[in-house]
Length: 211
Image (cartoon, rainbow, N blue to C red):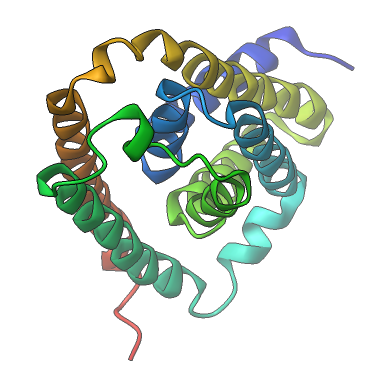
């Protein structure tokens, strides 16, 4: 039976987790500004959220979190991956190329799809936030509220990716200036550093560095 209060709670909780500008959102924002392959990128993000959130709400979160060494690999491997993305952002900001809509946005469809798959499926926060955290919170409401919670979470995903994917193009005139791309890449770089440090701070104490 549909529970509207659970739906709203899930919508708010999930939205608060999804809106953080991590690797996935940064890439969607960049492609949205450049109006390049936005629809397939948004579709991949939403489908990934559907699969991951559904698996978490239906009980896979506890199973995955209980796998020996899982938290360590996701935390430290993910932190290294995010730091590498941060380095790439700083390099792009201070490099000579890629300072225009033509050079800063991926125009090749296959490469754009491959990139969004990588920054989605190899992003530890995607797994921790959707499968583990959102899946864990859903247990508070009981199994009878799973459908309402799942619908609220998925609506948050559709709303967010629709907003940043489709409306980011409104910023395109601003990003005709090279300095705008430099500022964006620097901001993304700092966000990546912060994201990696918070990942280690929040989960690293409970997940010793794998040897």
